[in-house]
Image (cartoon, rainbow, N blue to C red; front, side, top):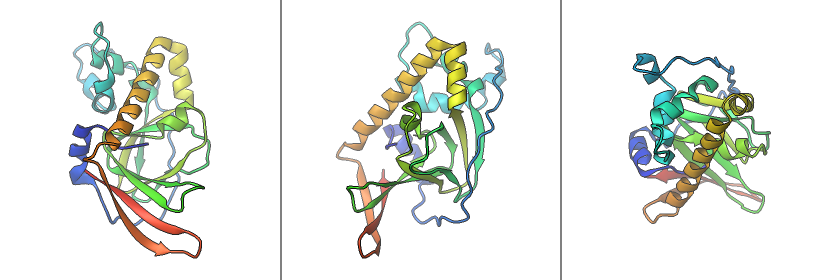
Length: 219
């Protein structure tokens, strides 16, 4: 998980919290959702979530000249399920097996990374229009961070069962979607290395054997 595209960063400026207490944590659950879609055409149903957030998050990485992005991402809509979270709610925990990725429609999440060879806890805020947990989910590996909702948030969850169903029913769509997600992650890592991106680090406490820090992205 890493900072995403510049226009999403700009959109997230007004939503970034820097002093939200974390408490009353509860595990978030996705219900799996409906797997049936509506005909696209000109219906207003095709403009409802999660299609807009799919387009906002991934359309920059859609490069098929034979199909428009709206029609492509509409095929993925039935495989996503909504998750409403409260501030302080745990989305997933470090070292747990990854079972889903989350698109952030509104609100924001905070990821806390802890590395064995690094003495500091590193925190990253993820805003609307970004994705959480995509790499560990797609690689079926353990989570490398604990993610908590900083504010009340609305997410869209694609779990392993949903991805497997997409692969079975629409294998080419699934293949292209995974490629798009990975392109987005790679681009986010490149943006994070630009000179304009900075981390604000504050030392919150001193432990005998470990120094604890808090890092937030400054857009």
